[in-house]
Image (cartoon, rainbow over all chains, first blue to last red; front, side, top):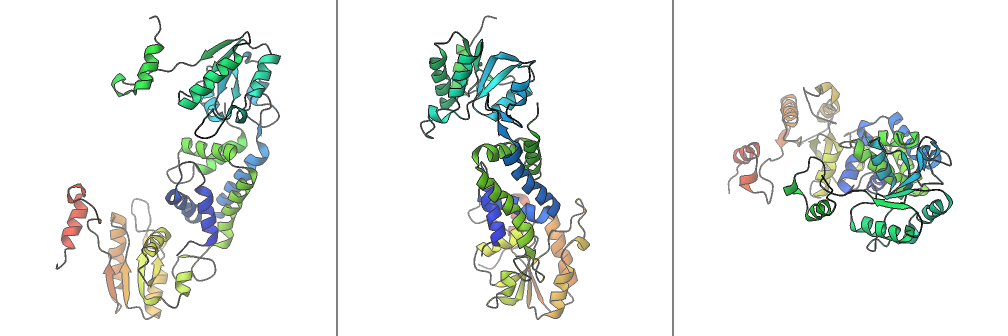
Length: 199
Length: 199
């Protein structure tokens, strides 16, 4: 026996979300059906449509924007000569949360991945080169993840940008604050060792 | 810095789902924004509206239905003299999946819970009594969960239905198939012991 078609359709939609399997999708859909009133569901439905209408991609950096440019690119109090390169919008917001970076960003929309078939042409790299060419940029901070994909992308960008008179840096990788050396994986310990500084 | 309003709204909606915190809701909403095309999002939005329009509650048993009666209550090949009582629709579908129960159901929509303030008046019990009074029912199988709430509800129903000339049974609780005795909790072992049968 199957659920009614309308419910099966909703389960199918929920199961497309990341890390959501059939069982969880079932749970979400049944929750909507049994615990939400009609007004809540209409709000949910409108919120989904809302993101297709009201959110754009910043033409300068690739961040989310409500107009042509995002709030960060529009902010003249920020240092537009310092550009931090991240894989995706979520990483950008993670850095914004620490509330201490005052430069601007560039969102790549992914990282080079041979296994997933993501090449340099799929990433938002060309506009970054244009920004370097056209503007007076002092520093590019590579903040791609410390994964095979993130490292490959960082290396590629370094090669690509090396010909321009800018300072290229990479964020530090090492032991997390509060982390115990004996619990850390080998790559993290290696990075912490390689990245040691005068004390 | 906050996400654009439309995205914040969607994060808020996702965070109402069971066991979904702020971080997971953020992940779901960003996934919708960056990995789904507009058509997928419109489908998702319509699927949500769909459950408010196309799904009703079966007037006989409380199961999900596309018309007045659910597919199970409409099915004349099933044994309508045998009624299995479950806490919710999900439990009903779990039993349907084993594909061997051929009777009908009654969905209570919860269980008596003093901590959550759910009393007998909040449950779909009255229609069950009506079914017992009006129809020739031979057996009521109590399949509420083996929790404090489920047991309380089962006991209450037994008291309530005891005056009618029907057979009242309770599903078996014990060690799960493939389960190891040494890993089972004390209540499960106790139930397995109490429920022992001639071999």
